[in-house]
Length: 184
Image 1 (tube, rainbow, N blue to C red):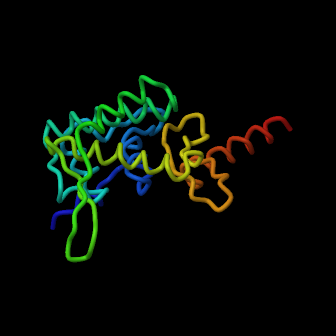
Image 2 (image 1 turned 135 degrees about the horizontal axis):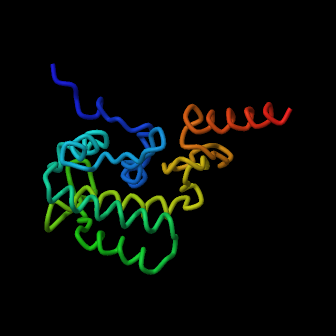
């Protein structure tokens, strides 16, 4: 029996909006930077984890364009409002468009791409625009100094600090506890 790609996703945080999930294809494990998107197999895992495996192919061109989109999004998340970072995301967005359609269920929208290899990266960049429209203040980087993950804060009061309480939150609490007991 073959295990679905999504079941083998090695990342510590999944399920974030697709734009942040693309950023989270890089993470730290035991002080070493990991990267899911080093090859087309990793891309296939990421596509499956986000329900895109039926729409896009994990081939070298798609990997190259998805990496370009990830780098553009990372630059913009790190430097919100930076004109150069904004231009990089706009370049990714130039590779697709939304077409209005009327189907049996009523009005809808469908993305179109001149080159389908841009599809996953474009989809992530468009998702980031949606996050900016709804709650840009809820796009966060994990507060743990050794973590590079991002999340969309959906907590009621908007005070989430950690990518995961079981991962980074507990590590931070343990570090504080150790520091207090060491002082005594």
